[in-house]
Length: 120
Image (cartoon, rainbow, N blue to C red; front, side):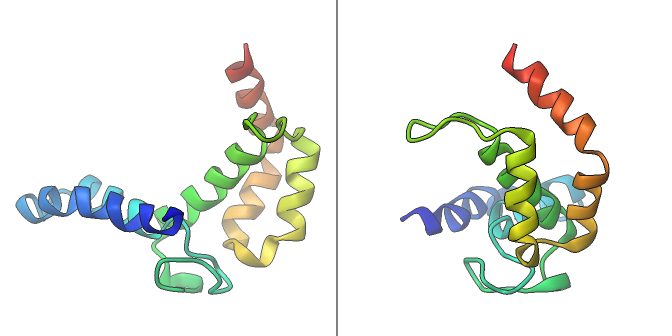
């Protein structure tokens, strides 16, 4: 069921994209909804796309989504620290666009500051 949320989200946006095919923002939203769980190494879903087959916006959101999930409290665990989250992403780096992941690491202080502001 969880793996179908990408298809459901994309389906919600299909009609809007069909009505406004010139709207690049809607098209990007559709692509993010559908492809944000695809993985650079091909291990993702729903289609097992790999590398640059995955739209750039979805590759960016994939990294942001995992970073946010790791650094947020969940009902089953406490948030990981920034350092722990980055270590997990480093261990799993083959799953993510190396350029996007590199930018996260390069600007980790900024992302850490954003997370701290959200916690206030």
